[in-house]
Image 1: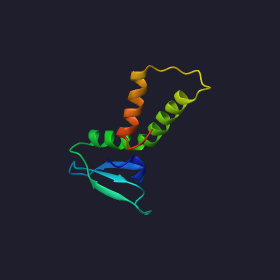
Image 2: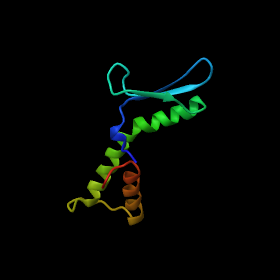
Image 3: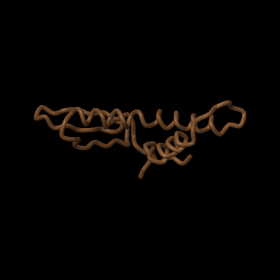
Length: 97
């Protein structure tokens, strides 16, 4: 799975007059840019775009949580199961922890 960091951002979406949707990644005048026909409705396109745009911030936040947990001088406690979920979320986004 490719990491989100390889996708050109920002992501955007739109709806054509006929009701079909599209999703755009990156700024069209500044390569790299890609655009594709989107999902069957604007609500789904909006959710996909929101997830793509939020991914870099989510990765940074999860990395900060993990770094804090691994810092021997920090007084942080997180149950092992929760820590495993942080690691799994990073892995799902193509990041090594």
